[in-house]
Length: 418
Image (cartoon, rainbow, N blue to C red; front, side):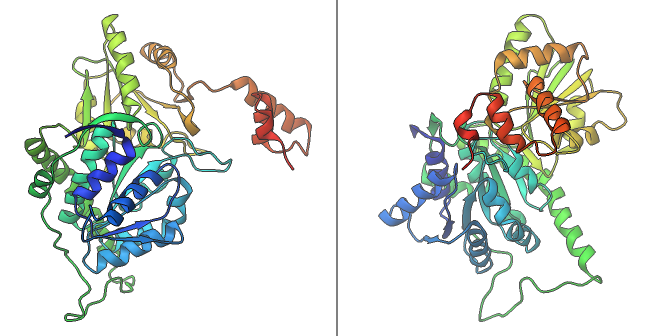
């Protein structure tokens, strides 16, 4: 059924169609509309046989989901930004225990300074926590990925994080195709947990493991991630057969045939990048893009094969490893190890800064001339940075860099202190 709805509401409808039995909710922008909508469905009775649990924190939200999943219930929660950091211990526990929880992350910047707008720093901070990480390009794909996420999680008995760009997708109204319940039921069978707490058959979940077995347990978690590299495309293909849409999988290619320059990215920015590529292709430039729909496990071999024939790679990412540079780019460089292909890192969109077609066009034209540093920042105001550095050199008590820069850009009220 076609509906013109907000992305968050579409995600909520997809989750409801998956027949969750426990939803743990704590509000944090920009994911709040998802759990609000699910709460309304449970209260109205349209989502049956589901317990909606309001908790006191993000840490509690995932902790309750861990308990309900261990008890054999299909479990779901959502979070963003500092909320994901607050539940970090539980994030590692969920994957270490092999519990098939599905969680939406409405991607948002991490402070300080505080920022509620979009980048992908939050989910990247948990990239090595043992969760599968899927990134949505559009709201339709966000909806579809949640349905696939439950299937992946329960097949492998491991948690899945569906990453959706905050505001850009979560708060955007688009036409979305909402599946019928019969379709979802045909694709997603009833939950049969691999491990379950049952008083009739007592077991321990989460027992202490010492040096004699810890390596093997952790290796098995890694092995399941490697299994996911084969399972995720299989499930995406089955999804396409039932729902008629090509959604999910490991990567998606856009005009990469004969491309000399390939842009690698993930998330919703691929839409703007594709528009720029179309214009540049019309002008005769051989340029294309690859979007990583799955970041963990990282599709190293598949990406390597897709990059074999190009002359350069530009990794465009909305996150920053302070003191290092690109996060995604390091994984891409692993994929191209042994090749002579240069890999450039471009960091843009931090804290919700607009990513314009003009800026991307200028960037890609420079890339085609190999006129990029190994790591660069899109549209950075270098003059403001230099003035702040000069201020710090000249004055021992130079003040807060964040407030100084706010004054520099003219946001005076936001820079006032009490």
